[in-house]
Length: 190
Figure: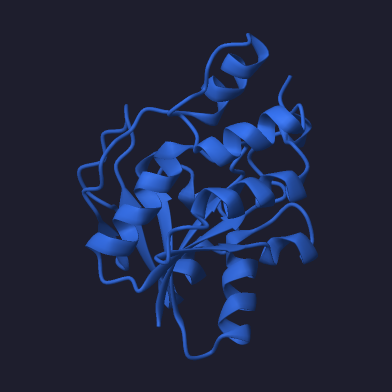
């Protein structure tokens, strides 16, 4: 089984994440895409994050009707902050017959050499790079195991959605209805 891994804070998950994950699952050689909820990204401040279990529940609600997608909380039991290489190593040990592919936005390419053991990621795993608004990567330098995938570009951000919620503006169509309801019921991001 060839599994794409889309890591993220998903704070909250939104339609851009879902379109990208589904596109990768249905328009590449991947059998499925797992959305890996990261408790803490080493490059992002943790004080803006909702609790990891709320974010996991929102992802679960968002993908419940899509057999092409899965959700993983694998990093919840790992040391924080989460490092991609550690998660990939753990998953490969747990599922030795699976092939794991890292899915990342092209805006991460300039930072990629600073990732923990970036060279090991490229040595043992394929990387599928998708376009991001404002990024201009025409080639993938020093990334021999990387493939550029022309997925749709959607300029939607969780930051914008959180701002809408704080300003009491509608988030309809930006997140699935079940996620909007969860946010409202649990009074998240207010």
